Amino acid sequence: MSEQASARPAAVVTGGSRGIGRGIVLALAGAGYDVVVNYARNRDAAAEVGARVEALGARAHLVRADVSEADDRRRLVDETLAAFGRLDLLVSNAGVAPDVRADLLEAGEDSFDRLIDINLKGPYFLVQLAARTMIEQLAAGTVSRPKIVIVSSISAYTASVNRGDYCVAKAGLAMTTQLYAARLAEHGINVYEIRPGIVETDMTGPVKARYDDLIFNQGLTPIRRWGQPEDVGRAVVAVATDLLPFSTGQVIDVDGGFHLRTL
Image 1 (cartoon, rainbow, N blue to C red):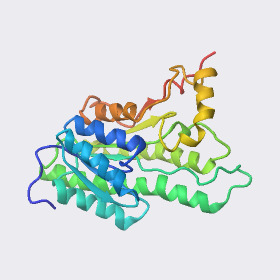
Image 2 (image 1 turned 90 degrees about the vertical axis):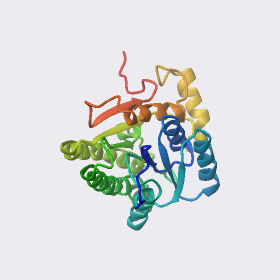
Image 3 (image 1 turned 60 degrees about the vertical axis):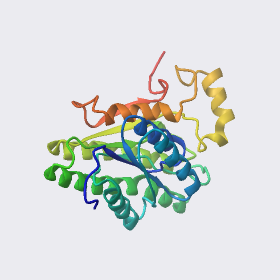
C-alpha cells in the first residue's frame, strides 16, 4: 500500500483501454479522478489512454489483469493501493462478446463458460474484493463516500437468441448490482448499474450496417443516433461526483430511449 493516500480520489476502470471503458476513463480524469486503467492485452491502447489522462492533469496507472482470474483481481486492487493509496470508485466495465454468435439450439458450452467467467463471475468477485477494501478504508478514514458502478447492457433484458450466453451474463450483472447495493448500504457504499444501449465501439463495428438501418430508418431508438463512449462516461461522472447520493441499486439507462415501450 502507498505510504500516503493521494489527495485526489482514485478510480479503477476495468476494460479501460478502449471503447466504453476508454470514454469512462477520460471522463473521470476530467472530473478530478486519478485512474487505474485496466486492460487485458493491448498495452499500446492502454498507454494512449494513460497519456490522455495525464494531459487532463490527472494521474494514470496501467494494470494488465484478466478479471476472470482471482490472482489478477487481487493484483489489480493491490496495485491501485500501491499507486494511489486509496480506492474511491470501482467501475466494472470489462466484458467480451461471443467469438461466434450461435443459435440457442446449437450453442456450445465453451463460449458460455468463457462469457460467464469474464462477464459475470469476474465482476461479481471483483466487486466483492473492492467492497472489502472500501470498508477497510472507510474505517481508517482514507475515503469518505466510495462507490461502485457496474456497466451492463440492454442485453440484461433484451433476448437475442443468437447470443444467449451474453444475455445471461448481463442479466446476472443486473442482479449483482441489486445484491451488493442491498448489502453495502449500511456501510455507505452506493452501487449503481449503468445500462448502455447501442454504442459505437469496436465491439459493435461488425454489425454497424445493421444497426445503422435499425436506428436511422426503423426508429429502434427514439433518439436516432448511435451512443458514444462519452455518453456512458458522463453517467459515470454523475455517480462519481456524488450527484445521486440518495440512490443505490439504481439502473441508469444510457440507451437513446431504447427501453421505452411505445404504441
